[in-house]
Length: 190
Image (cartoon, rainbow, N blue to C red; front, top):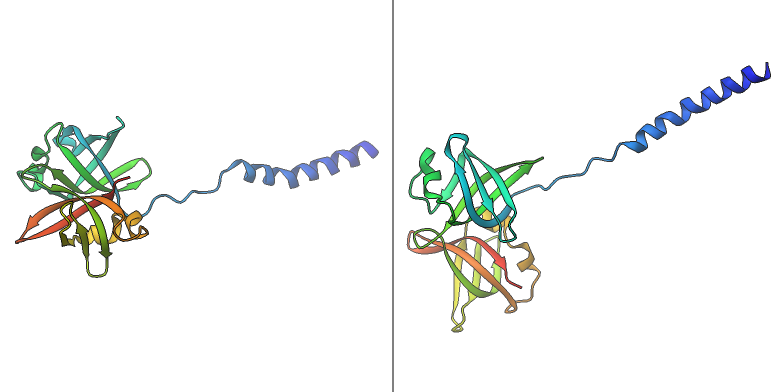
């Protein structure tokens, strides 16, 4: 009788402990990155049939991006389905994308070239996200205020906001649109 009681008590204890052990084995969900992320690199390969592009970053890592019918390609030679043709192997690009698991979807691809986005290195003096402007000081001491795209005003260069004025060196990627310079991307240079 005593051994039967011991067996029942042990079985009950195992039932109480088992759910705790199972719960402890499953890791808690980890929240992913939300919003748009930017990545700069060179086009390694495009696959028009699959609407994908592989971009290789400066450190040699290759990233696969899926393009949709809503993906905007700035500085390309064609629009719509032919937009990938403007992204030649080796061309420098900045990809603005969202990630869901391992799948990265390009929302915008900015081609950096003479006929694409241009680049200026400067010191940022002010970022006004509400007015969608950035004021920079060039090497010759002149100041310019440039417009920011909606995406740049919301998602780009957050580390510049915290920097003291006249100390944050940045690289600004812009395009001349309707007679004014519009910044698509900027990043802090350390």
